[in-house]
Image 1 (cartoon, rainbow, N blue to C red):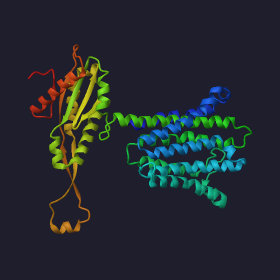
Image 2 (tube, rainbow, N blue to C red):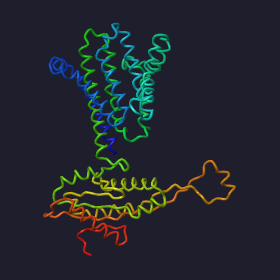
Image 3 (cartoon, rainbow, N blue to C red):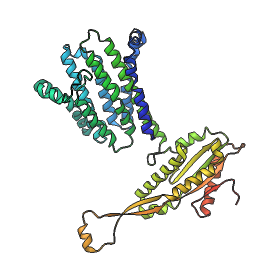
Image 4 (cartoon, one colour):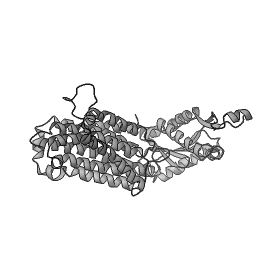
Length: 424
């Protein structure tokens, strides 16, 4: 299971909290009467969402900035909808419009590429994001029949069970497609978290529509606060993960970088082992096939190392990687690295090259798009393994010993594992 899928599952479990609270009504008045609730819980989503917007701005993710501010506005509306509209029917229609327009606005915000915060493109993003709200407001005011048929197009009568419009399903389907096909891996984890908050948001809209005609808004406000608090907590965790990735994750190979390795090494205690891994003839490969293919090789090697060794692999720099073995695994570090070396040796790296040697008449027929042919290239690594000893003063000594073993592996012909315990 990938890291993104694991966190998506955790977020979905957290999203069940508003439903859990809703089905425990005796708990609600007790919390509502507590002073801490009125002084803090109401403000928590405001503070959290504003913090998310600022953090998104600081890492040049303006899409996160605008979507967080949009949630601030929606939270304020749900909390104080009775102050905006005195008539319950108008208030209900407004919630219906928000429920459909919100995922469409998110789709518009995130389908556009990143830009500077204060720029024409950013302004265009905001204006286009507001269009779904304006369109449905216009339909409700000037074409109510079209509005009703469009939002509640479902052939089955589900009004008694679901109060949100049937068009909401299609709107969220569009947003999920945007999440799935987002090409930029950097905000992907945040987008997945944002998609999971669909559950508390729809729950909030459902409760708001159910309690729309109620004489008291206490229960509705309580559920709104819980739903948005859960969403804010999930999104805050997701953006903090983005910061963690920015600091500790290598952007090319998507495995922990040297900074993460250095901090891991500071915590190691005997016994442990370190393996220094170097891709054979990598500079020559770059000269022949280009740096773009070289980057692909780095990704493939990193993926294979991670597949074989788990989360204990780090990119040390350039074409070098480092693997950490602790406790019982330290004793069998050489065996683990030998298995990994063989696994990588068996895999072919496929290059896609233009076919250059062709007869002239074929060239003329394929002038616009020349077919590509695949070429398999074997990628191998040399590995040096070193073990800590009770008298080891620092991890630099073990790294130095692993480097010496790595150079011995290269001198012996490459594509092999040499341990510091082996004799010359």
